[in-house]
Structures are given as structure tokens and as C-alpha cells.
Image (tube, rainbow over the protein chains, first blue to last red):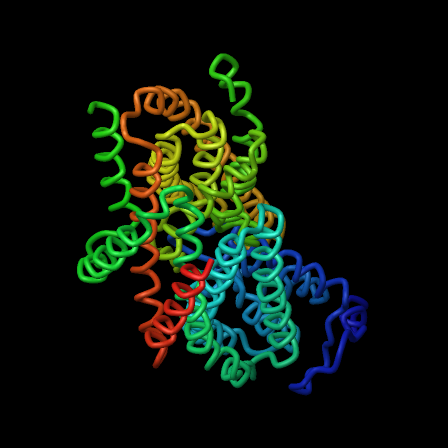
Length: 264
Length: 231
């Protein structure tokens, strides 16, 4: 066995698929750190491809030079995933490369991973966890807290979930390798988005009147009018939402209001 | 921020804008780029964190509908929040038009920064094509270099967008606020109504993601309104 493969034998934990090539702790930590920059060279052609190779590189260093270069070239091709779940792909693909799986099989596995890792992450994080944490922070502001507590609550809460998800992804990928698919049926990934949406709905209803009240400030009498406008406007946005995003529509209305207020 | 040394005083906020813009997609995505955070930090840089927080809340309500799915085009709130926070915190306390004008500046910046992300992604693609031979040969040096250049360009993009937006919009904002003719209460109410409308639309979408979420929203709304009346 070559020296570099012996180095790779220093185990950091049990491997569930019977692999004979555990990953050194230093390599796993290096890969985990790089995951935070996985989208550093995101582009419309290879999407996350180069980022996957960038993150997998520390894990592949134990391979003999020929296999190392071939693996790195393979991992830099087109790939798409949610950035927080990219660790699942990085871990599983690196595991497959370390185990000497047939390159054609790795290519097929890589293609199959793209879809689920994108859609699961989008629903869980962008459409679930992020709005929930945002609404909780708005609630903290609504009850009268200042900048430090509001930002601390938002960043602290959000990043507990964020960092945990990245760490779980890399760990499960490295442990399960090509058998990572059942891990994506984890109840948190499967049922989490719906549960988060329900919690966010309650919190949104609870905090919205309070947060708006604090922003309006002295104009308390206008709160009812603001709420009525919001309801009617939301219905209009929901009706025409596919043609105009809310913030762009807001920019147009606000430009008209600024013009009116300046020339009157 | 005083008008005379505007370009000099814009530099620290622009450097902060670079960090906030970088966080949106490239590194480390810890949500410093959310407008609640970016506007508050920019406000703190100008000396009024509480003002930054207030406009940050307005922009956060507007950002609730933004879902940054992969290749879709969306507002880049890091630099937009920094500009909004700096412009609002830089106005006189109690200026009637400060909130609407600063929100307008933030949203105008969001249009520009959203476009700048497309340019960055096209630049990244050209860079990757240029490096293709070395990357296809499995060169770690080429892979790492492409990644680091992308990160550096994104930081430069965020800094440049913030600086240009501040240089163009801050003096304009001061002029607009000086000429403002609507009273403070109604000015704030208009901005709040617009932000609440977009937030309500986003929550409407959220409620359609799970069974009974709409009823839970109504339940929360009743509780929130009751608390408001009891205060």
C-alpha cells in the first residue's frame, strides 16, 4: 500500500458502507471550511461544479497522483445543489473516489444527486428556515428590543441551523458514500418544510401588527389603514405575482410618491 | 455622512458593502446580507445603528418574498441594505422624507446589484472557460485559483456597487429630503403600507406550503392584534 493511502487510513469515525479508506480529520475539517465558499465561482455554465472540486480537494489528497488528478477533473464538471447540502455531494463523491468506484458509476451517481440536493435544500432553507428566522427577528424588534438583540437573535438562530446542516451533510456523505440516498429521506428533510411553514405562519400573524406599529411610530391612527392597504395589495400581488416581484413594484410606487412629495 | 468629504466617508461603508455582497452567494452565506443585518451595520458605521435597524426592518419585510433559488434572478440585499442604512442614518433625525427616500435608494441599488450579479456569473463562466484545460487535467492549483478569483471579484463587485450607489444616491437623497412636502406621519405610513403589502404577499405564499397554515396565520393575527389593542 502506498504511503499516501496509509495516511488516509487514519480514521476519523466509522464508515457505514464497509469502505477501507477512512478520511483524516484534518482533511475533513479542510473540506468543511471550504464548503462555506462552495459557490465562490458560481456561473451559468458549470454552476457549482468548480466549487465541488474545490471542497473535495482536501479529501482526495490521499489518492495516488493519477487517480487524484482524474478525480479532481471529474468533480469540477457541471453540478447543481443547494449550497448548504453540497456537503452531502462532496462527502459522498469523495468517498466514492477514495473507494475506487468505477468512474462511469461515479458520473451517473453525480448526475443523480443534483436534483434532490437542490429541491430539498431550497424548500427546507430558503422557503422554510430563513423566513422563519427572519420573522422571529422581526418579532424581537416588535417587542421593543434594540439592534444588538435583534441581530444577535437572527444571526445566532439562523446559523445554528445553517452550520449544523452543512456539518451533517458532509458527515453523512463521507459515511455513506454511494449509499447516501436513504439519508435524504431523513424526517427533517422530508417533513421539515411543512412544519416550518406552519410555525412561520403563526409567528407572521402574531408579529406583523406589532412590527408595523413600531415602524409607523407616532402615526398610530393610520395602522388600520395600513393593514387594509396591505391586505388588498397582497391579494393584487398574489393575483399578478408571476408578472411583477413585490420589491420592484414597490420601487415604482415609491418613485411616484417621492416625485409627488417633492413637486407638490 | 457630511456632503463635503462624501467620497472619503463612503469608503468604509463601501468596504462593508463588499463583505455584505460577498455573503449573499459566495462566502460564507451566514445571512449578513439580509437587509435587517446589512442596513443596521451600515447605520452603525454612520453612527446611528437604531436608524439602520428601522429601515432594515422595512427592507426585511420587502425581502421576505425573495427566494434565492439557484440561477433565478433576485435582489442582492447586502449592498442594497448597506446603501439604505447609510442614507437613512445620514439624514437629520426626524426628517419627514428620510424613510421613503432611503427606501427608494435601497431599492434602486437592488436593481443595480441584481444586474451586477449576472455580470459576475458571466465573468466567472469566461474565467472557467479560460482555465478549462488546466481544470480538466485535474490541476488543484487551477481549481483553487478559479474559486479564489471568483470570491475576489464578488467582493470587488459588492464594494463597487455600494460606492457607486452611495456616490450617486446620497447627494440626491439629501436634495429630495430638503424639498420634501409630505408630513412625517403620512410618509412613514406609505412606506410601511408598501412593505406590509409585499410581506403579506410573501406570507400568503408561505401559507400555501402546508395544510392549515392559513388558519394558523389567522390565529396568530388575532393574537397579535389583541396584544396591540391591549398595549
